[in-house]
Length: 402
Image 1 (tube, one colour):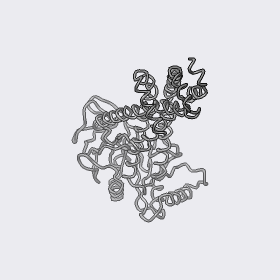
Image 2 (image 1 turned 135 degrees about the vertical axis):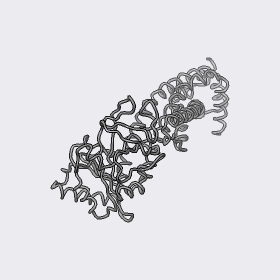
Image 3 (image 1 turned 45 degrees about the vertical axis):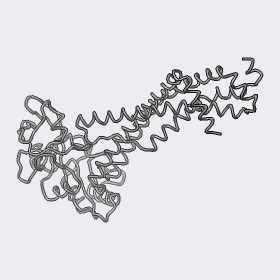
């Protein structure tokens, strides 16, 4: 019986194809926007999650000042941290390896171009090498890593090499950082987290920025049999004791990779839902269009309604028939919207990859496709409810008179 209703609905819509397509415009524009935004947002979310997972979930970040989503430059932070804080972290139970860095915004010149970029002073000792190897941090696409004894050598992020200056940077090119010349010895692999950084040896940065003890942040890796959240609490407690601070008065932030992922996912989800919500406003316009079309359909098929009622069709039969027809109208618009949304998101992915964001991918889930189809069918059915009720309440005699 239900199948018959759907067959009748499809026949009715195919019989007035021009009106059907015009009615569907609002629905498929809305579904297109929603699907494209959600797939692109989910793809970005997946890319960031994979980036963090590749760097290790047993990673802990300690930075001066309040909570944040990741390492910040020391000159951007509220508190101050020193090498003594690093020693405290290294002694914390469950910490396997820890290292510190300096981060400063600096004047960087290449040829005649001047930019203000983030320069990191990163250690070149055994702990730093182990940290980089185990976390995937500072993986290189070209050249070599910084070594102990390098004086004015630099490793640059992928975005610095290929997107920042008018001309692409190459190995052996020279950058002028705060009036000092540095030779490029390595270029990082594309990364969502560190492609916009420049790295110089920590000992050179200390001398360069006159910061003999200051650190901008600390990276730590926990032992394999330890819970990162538990070790993070131990490190926080040790640092409070060392800095003579009470609980809740910390002038530093201890964040695990899992916490960072959760914070980023929360923000991205809110932004994606907000943008999709704005895009979904066009679905309201589409719903009004379906309602208007269904009212017109009811008027055109008045005699048909009278005939159906005279041979035994009930009010519920007529109601269901028109509800399914309006729902199918919404469903057809949703199907077109999904196809267009897929094409737009894949185009966005292609453009992003061409621009150098190789990590970015759109993400299509079965839930998104089925959910979009069900939602578009529901929008259509709800929009056709009032016209369907009007049709169901018609008396056969009145219908024949019209």
